[in-house]
Length: 420
Image (tube, rainbow, N blue to C red):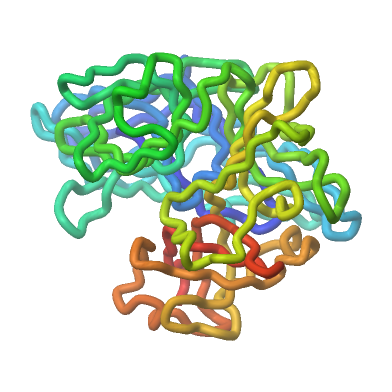
């Protein structure tokens, strides 16, 4: 099982990169193709920070593998220009198209194994003497462990389309949408199990699922090869275009929004006629909803999410009504991933956060509070927030960005310490 995730670069608001092939080399010198060039997949890596997805489910021979080679192509990004305040698409020349990584992966006969491919976008995107962007890929290969305390393989907030439901075994199968140059391709297929701990949003059980439904899925790879679902969300059964992405503009700039523009960071069905941006209108029939996953609403009595409080910088899931008005049928406030520096204040359950890049600062979010709850996952932080150093530590965070009494607060689902 091949997973993909990212550590982002500040002014790169999106980053699309095609993985052409993945080849493993064993200790005996034999090579095995895990992803062939005919199966290449383009991913939007920026939204995969702390939220991996699956590149490929591959069958490989039993062996000890000591290296993995990735071939990549055609990186492009949406960059924020602080001087002009504009966002534009930029293609980036690739300095190195193939990168070889050390690996220590032993696969026994009948075993299930996972490999996480972590792209460090902050180090991969560089600037030459003229100011032009260059891409020199920096990946890390991390072996998945099924042991308690080990590094798990999981997917987080991944769009998935139901292909089959097996109620007698409490499981269902999904296909992840895929694309190359905005042309739809078949993504990997996963078998997902549910148990008594699985949380459902807007539905009650697997019995509410039917083939063709679009879900958002949080699930963890098991040693059986199936995924165990932590959260299953089904916001709509409408057939309209579904877009996941960050709000980059709203109209009017203040007051009650009548339209907004998003960066396209995921979509279903995969669009063939749109690029990096997609706009929606808002009317009286548009439904607003907050994803309640890991968001203690009782702790935020002043929380509102509606046309008045929709803000630039929030991550949304929006569905086109397809009635010719261009209006969104539903808009769900969802989780956003960021990287940045810890600010001047660190408490027992919150800390100040300064996101990388200039986009957030230009939109009134140069610093805001990150709140952790009992459900927040803390990575590389054995002593909790005590591991953070004010005005020094670099962290990546994932959670819901809300506005309480006008101030931005990110309620964290996951926090990873990158540099102490």
